[in-house]
Image (cartoon, rainbow, N blue to C red):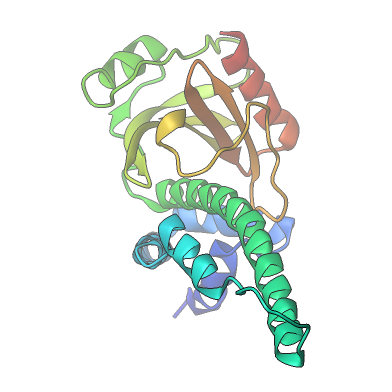
Length: 248
């Protein structure tokens, strides 16, 4: 009963609709409360399963082409009212398809960012956030060999204020990757690494700071790998860790 007030806001928390101060308070509570962390973990997993099922029924490019051909207007000998109506309707359809293409691309990017946020929350809520527990990068990096189909480097963080807590395997839309956890001033930062070619959206080469996200998030491409850094730490701390990765 003591956590009822927290659980009433759990969905709002997972959707990133709380204020920044409330998000930080909620993060601390989820890490310390086994009941709320288990509830949060279950809801995140259910959310990801629903997203996965929904994508199975997305219309294919070939289906769109068949629809476009089926509604294409036939030649008319005169500008009859029916022809004018069909032309107007076609204009709306074409505009809708163009808008759908743009929105679809943006939606794909937002889906990736949402999945990254879910992976971060899922880790915070887990009783075992890492599979390899070590502050030594020379222990954590070799652990991933043979578990993921690529290699990556970890930066030297001695005397930087950051602490490596460990890592675990993770998946983003069935793409295997590495999930690393860092700590700075009692805030956890997730760094996730995937092969760029396996991701469901083109995120570009430069760092991106998507809006309307419950956490500070930066992403960048290096050597065919896509990196994400996300957490409730300050933007300057996230950026500091990102620079260490880029400079290693």
